[in-house]
Length: 113
Image 1: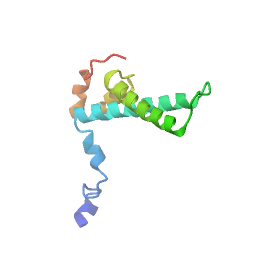
Image 2: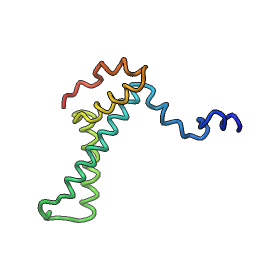
Image 3: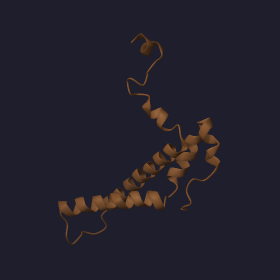
């Protein structure tokens, strides 16, 4: 118990696990892809809320189905046709970590925005 207090926050508390997840390039790229998926999803949701016209058939079930469909589309977009914000975030975070910074110069994705 006193070792945890002397050494600060330890893994026993579960609070420092977020720092070790970015320790490899693969994990950093996966996090960047997930970030891009969330960002694109928020963008699409915002566009949907700007209703330019009233739909012919509108119900809670259709809205739920559309949201699920949008989520799948966004995941596929982030995986196959990224807009680039995830790669930019990945490069930025890799600069702060010396072990990953050397790998940051090599592109990990062949997709072009």
